[in-house]
Image 1: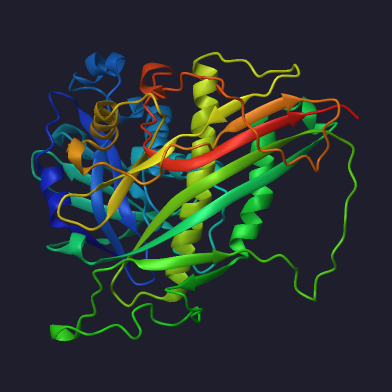
Image 2 (image 1 turned 45 degrees about the horizontal axis):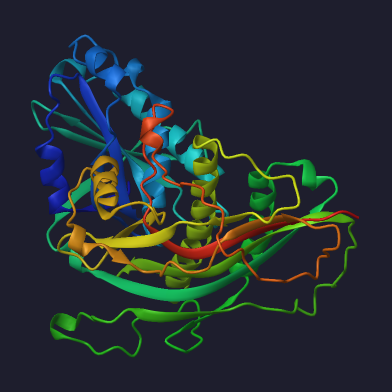
Length: 453
C-alpha cells in the first residue's frame, strides 16, 4: 500500500487555476511535512520561468527533456531557505498538455532526485533511519484534470515509482502546533596554517559542521520541562470538543548545550598552530511547526534542531553569495573586517498559524521582501504582515590581521563604522538566477581574526 498525501484544498485550487499560457508544461514544488503514517501538503509553488525559456516552451511540440533541472533545483534551494523547522520540499509537480500526457514520468523521476540531491548538499544535518525517505511526484493533465501521484525512495536512485493517494482536506492549515526558541550563537572557528589558505566560505562551513554536532547533542526543554522522546507533545493539554487537543500559544523551547562528554567518551585536546580565527556571534530566533495529529516530543525537538542549523547556515551562505555577487574581496591586511549577517523575517500563510520566512539585509526594503515572496512562492503577501523577529544590532562579521593576537583574544570591540558591504541578495538577476529572497532574523556576525605565529 502506497503513502497517503493529505492536501490542503487551497493547494488543489492553486493547481487547477494554473494557466500554462501557451507552454507545453509547467513544473513546481510541493511543500509540507512528513510523518510516519501520512504526509501533509500545505503549499505548492510553480518554478519561475526563465526568460529565454518562454519562447522555446510555447511550442506544443516541446519535449519534457527540455525541462531545466538546474533552474528547478536552484528554485528549490531558494525556497528551502524560506521554510521554518518542520516544513520541507516534499516533492515536485508537473502540469502538461494532453499531447504530452505520456511523456512525463522520466522527467519527474530525474527532477525529484535532482532537487533532493541539491538541497542535501547544503544541510548541516542528516536524515535518521526512522524518517520517511519517499518523495512525491504529481502529474496533472491541464485538459482532463487527471491526477497521477507516485513516490520514489530518494535513498535509492534506481527505485521504481510507487502509487500514492492524493486526498484533499479542508482546514488543514489550522491544524498545526508552533514551537519557538531563541538561541545565542558564539561560534569560534580557529584557522590552522593549512586552512588559512582556504576561502572564508569553506572555513566557515567546516566550523559550522562541528558546531552542528553540539546542537544535535543539546538538551531541549519544552515549556521548561524535559520530556521523554516518545511522549505525546500535547500531554497535559486541555481537551476541547470532539476529543481534539488544541493550544493557541506556541511551545517555548530552551536549548541547553552540553559542555561535558559522556563518561563513555574520552576527552582529548588537540594543539594546532593557527594563523587566525572566524567568529560568529549573535542571537537567532527560531520557529518550527508540527501537525497536531498525535505529535511526538522527538518530532518537535527534531524540527527545532533543524531550524537552528538551517537558519545559521543559510544566513552565512546568503552573505557569501552577496560578497561574491558584489565582488567584495576578502581582506588580507591588518584591518578588522565586519559583515552583518541578514536578519530573519516571518510572514504567515493566509488562514494559518504557520509562518514562512526570509532573510533581509539592512538596506533591503519591505517592498523587496514582498516581491521576493511573490517570485519564489507565487503567493502575494501584505507588507503589514511582515514580522521582523530580530532587531538589527551589533551582530556582525569581522576579520582582522593582528601579529599580537591569539586564540584567546575575545575582544568584541567593533569599529565605529563597520565596513559596508551593500548586501542585497537577488540571485534571480545573476546566474539565470532565482532570487534568494531573504528576510531572516539572525543577528549573528562573523569575525575574522588573522594573526601570525
